[in-house]
Image 1: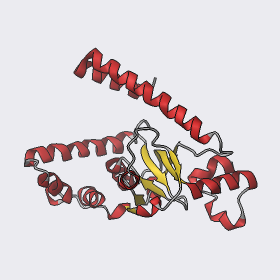
Image 2: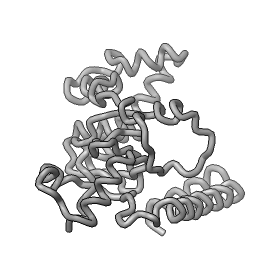
Image 3: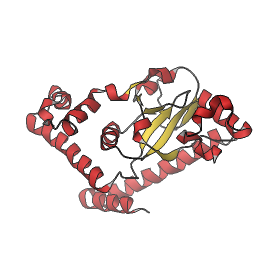
Length: 230
């Protein structure tokens, strides 16, 4: 068990008691086992099964797709989040750096503006937060930012991403941490791939079985292909 999980367990035990800690442990183990079962059921048929956990430069996550795919397909089940899926779902993506959240972080950490002058502050006030409540939330982001800046990115908190038909990365969760990682110019962050377009998976299979063609030479350094190229 990593130091992170030990610390989190102690924190839960102190704040919420042994019963809640036991419940969380059982839930964690169940999630882990179910994810593995679903992975084996769905992906052992591939010669080059999709990669799920690795690290990439945050700068190459150029798109955002959070929530739009699940709403589009009206997913009701909790398992599995990790799929190979055909269709035009990847066309629902938007530019990550056009998001008002990212622009708020730029204002805060690049332009040194107070939170009150950002849309993030307006967002909380429009949700009914008082000034003090909004600032409490936003000051928490300051603490996380400074922690990442001083201590590096927490490897136990991967950004969940989707991979489109052309291998483009799309942020599914962790928008605040991704904003911070981009602004800090981190070399790499952990990601967990949860959805892969069927066309990209077909290309992985082809490269695995036949090698990298001249047509796809531009993909030689793509992070998702390193396990089958090296």
